[in-house]
Length: 190
Ligand SMILES: [Fe+2]
Image 1 (spheres, protein in one colour):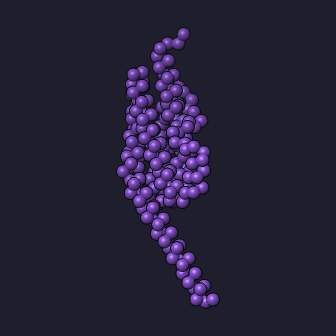
Image 2 (cartoon, rainbow, N blue to C red):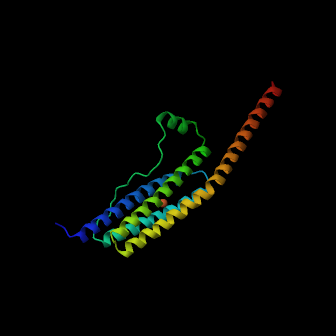
Image 3 (cartoon, helix red, strand yellow):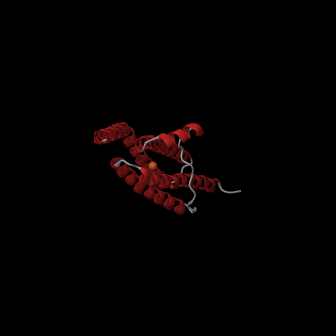
């Protein structure tokens, strides 16, 4: 039978690896978002959070190794709402790049909030397990970063969505005017 202290370390390691698996998934997601995003301000924030997330992976790996564990390379599944297939196809095929950006920025917020919730729960659990102070401090640092990005998204998503929708309307109007102009030109030359 193993000593209860060892059991606590095993649970701490499992928790740290779980967090790392979500950060592994977050890096993949942020890289994809960064390559697809059409808004420079959002891109800048995503790029900053991607660098932060890579640092978080390193911090978690460091703690796992310090406690005698092996850092996980697998990625967990991030909580992204999944629409029913019929609506999903409609959204994916029928959305403009601006609409897609708004849609994904909501998912960004959901993910960051979920990450913060998971770290809060993890910290509480590890405090009950009397995990070492360095590990708790590491998780608190990461929690602050997740909260701060989630708060930024919450405060700015609406403003950015309005800007994107305005841009889309202007582009539509411009296209309509160009078509009308070419129709008039063709009509007068005929
Ligand atoms: Fe994050």
